[in-house]
Image 1 (cartoon, rainbow, N blue to C red):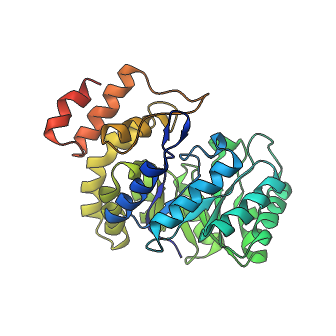
Image 2: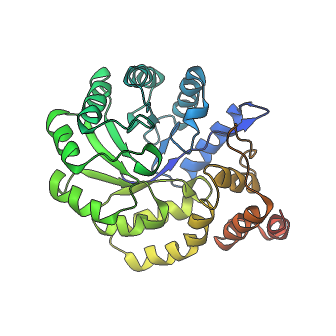
Image 3: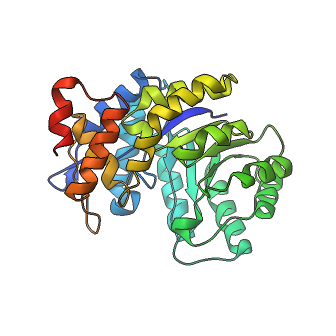
Length: 302
């Protein structure tokens, strides 16, 4: 159902408020650059920093700007199942094409709790569900066995965003869930290898600032042109690393500000990267060929 480069969109702020114009311009630019899908209100979109009304508004703005050109997979994750259900229904009403549902964070449920959580949110709407497994943030790992159970019981469980960073999981999930089940990487640095092992794409942070390069790399892997994919990966590797040189999404918002896409504003407790890390990010943006010569020297001194 989903494939290619799917951007985990940042949420631009200005003076503490949503920057709606910048966000919709970002969405339009993403699609023009070849992005294959959009994820508003995920981890990179600072969903946990948004009020419920803001969350719904961001998805509405994304759907409006995308205008059916690419799928919109709206974040609907919560550590509280009833809130997840409420979000899922609101995302449906906002026009989303699918839901991205993260494992409940902080509370550390057991596997039965995870199963019941995903099932309740799945059953709350008729939208496809993309399960988001990111143990590093949630302190809980959705087991392959639980995914098999969900696949057997939930007709609209269609994909996984796998941010475990464990490439062996791709093979285990492929064996257990079938070769046709949609596996999406949640980690830019290993996205090429992920596809080589059976993945179909990446829900990408880097694509916020390098959408064309990320889309071309994904297309190359899916065509089996690994030589071309590796060329593009080499161009992107410093950027992949730099965008996680400090707490995300601080680095990617700073990179976006260098390109004039939005302000680097964050909401507490998130703060912008320091000067040293900003220099690393600027150098990586320049290495990827994203800065015009007139801006390169100034950015490197940021």
